[in-house]
Image 1: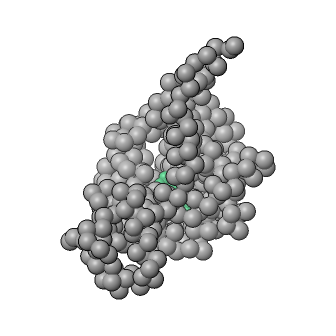
Image 2: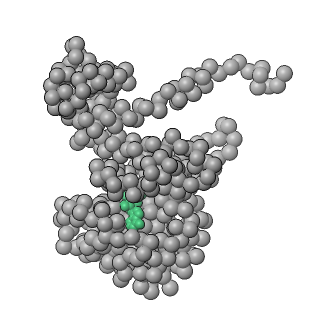
Amino acid sequence: MSKQTEQAPDLSIYTSLAEMIANFPKAQYARALALLRIPDLTVAGPRPLAELVGETGAHPESLRRFLRACVMLDLTVETAPEVFGMTRMGALLHSASPFAAIARGTAGLQHYVPYGYIVDTVLTGRPATKAALGMTFYEYLDANPDELRQFGALTSITSGDCGEAVAAAVDLSAYPTIVDVGGNSGTLLGQLLTAAPGNRGVLFDRPAIVPAAREQLAGAGLADRVEVVGGDFFDRVPDGGDLYTLKNILWDWDDADAARILATVAAAMPSGATLMIIDQFLPEMPLGDGAELDPRTRELHRVSFSILLQRGGRVRTEAEYRDLVTAAGLTVTEVLPAPGAKRRWDLLLARRP
Ligand SMILES: C[S@@+](CC[C@H](N)C(=O)[O-])C[C@H]1O[C@@H](n2cnc3c(N)ncnc32)[C@H](O)[C@@H]1O
């Protein structure tokens, strides 16, 4: 008898696996509560179903069953027959809380539906978004303005204090004009310019993002120091900058597309300008059943597959970034960490000769 069959069976693996399989819809309950704004509507306390129906325009019987299902998930409570409020956990989905944006964005259909097509991606090596949604990830956002807005809110939240961490790690005064390529609604650029009051900025992203970026940067009091430019980074990006930042851009794309983006950025950079890649480098894969898996390693190896599934991209090691940047004709000058409050960013700086 082998050693394995002699051991007492670990019953927890049955329940863990059963829970993993059964739990797939949970995120959608949280997202739907946030989209229906039930936490906002009950912020002052539980309310009768009829009032919630009136506020949401929902189908009464379906809303009742949905809210009762949410009771089973510890998101809502029924305090009297057909009177519903939020638990402390469910209340975190209030639209003033970052969790509402996380639930709406992370569980948005462009993120969620492709998971039904994992086998396709594993067999073909291509993202599943075309099969799942009939278009690419970013085409889907363009066609769905609500999802576009929610994706912007999500990237802003996951960006956190990245700009402050970068400003603490690098002397930004050496770069009077900063061009943030694929900067979405301007969270990173806003933080960089706030930390470097003498600098100017150019935010470059797809045309659909431009209005939200203008609004956010104007709201941060930066309208007179920033230009917002819409375009396609496979064609061209604004020229004349001193520092070009690419934060969480290359991980969306396979090596061939990442090389095309770096080529257009390198072509726009004046001689002596600097490229800064801001990403998280893929840690070594720990091997073996009992291997130590720290949270960062767990997250990045998981993201490296999910980003392939959704967008065809990959999380890269430092060596892989060095190869891409060098192939674009740039000289790597520095690699350093930028620790933020929630995560550590990895910076790779390269100069255009
Ligand atoms: C993963 S998000 C990162 C956003 C931001 N840099 C951050 O880290 O929060 C990728 C960004 O690339 C932009 N993008 C995608 N395709 C693009 C294209 N062809 N041209 C310009 N921007 C593009 C998206 O609109 C999005 O804002």
